[in-house]
Length: 307
Length: 250
Image (cartoon, rainbow over all chains, first blue to last red; front, side):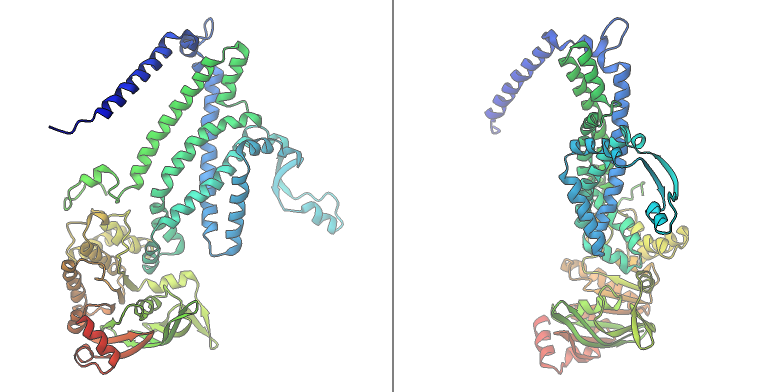
């Protein structure tokens, strides 16, 4: 006779009852207003999840997530490498960056960036301190800007929100990447440089690909957190964003709960897609570690077809 | 091929090498014996400049390693120049240090393709031949994690040989292996020695040193205590310290 597990059955029974109660709530309580969420919010209009402004907002949220993550990850890698650099100035600057941007809440940062336009009239590329240099040599109004744009135009809305999120993200990514790089056995870099690889090659070809195994899972976390943090840019203010658009509908129609449910559903859907993507990325960088079931099952001594 | 003059190396206040001299001729196999902490691995790592020496000079094939002599002063070489010097020196580590994210074949091909920018098909052919030579022709598409320690170390040897080195450095190549796997790695090294490769081997394998070595040095406390022909040093050590060490390992 196998060992009996009465505790398991009890737990299953409790959970089953709770699930049944939850389902009952979803299906019978008409205040959820599923029709409003999925089918139509009024004559000839689609459900709240699929109305035009909400889909626009969804696009904005995705765009914000992707762009701020791309910038955040790229900048984070650079800062992590600076932090590990033997040059003490670089290392200190990297530390300072991480310190500042991790300390300030994203919400505060978003609002702050939305108001940074106050500092300058125009923002552009050119020779730094051109005005001051000009005055030094007796030329007033020396302008050596190659390209400039009105500050309030550049830093209004979307760009300000994106920068706030990206710069904050870079600070977190820097720590994640640093941990990843430091997790790689120093013998790896040693063996590679003994073969004559340059420091850049050692980093790109040997250390970073191995660090990725450690970097990817927390980066997946960060991406998912970013999807949700995009709702903070509503305070910049950016209206081109999912949650703002949904809230606008609820304040117009006075229908609150179904709109919030619709928001939850959209965030659920986005994160599910991201989790699937993360699975494949992890599998790619787990190559050679027996971390993926496929490579573990391959019998030793049989040549695989894939390189 | 290798000449070391009065090499000193310290880590902080700890002086690990206190004036080591060595001369290894081309085609010679030099074995380095000594208790742990005697500085033998550090000395080996100084030869390809993985460690900077604090004083003294090391020449490999006439090149001063890591420095340029100008006007009686030593100027440190740039990283690129050091990397170029290392190309002709192969190194095999105690813990193999194969790249785990690359297949066996990619491990061997990496340096010739990236560093020397040789044509891929040519390198591939040479890599396959080398892997065949170390007895791993059937494992080229496996990842290092799927191989035994002995197999991994043989891949590491093939990886170093793929750069066509003039000199091979072995840092306790069999110390991390199960006893029954030591033989297969030593066989590959013997084969290499027969082919006339110049080798410096830090090892605890007295049998290998006696059989394959052309010269032997015994180090202790950061200095060379005794050197000479392996049979003589092992069979008839002159120094008390050598005798004490050998009596424990033999």
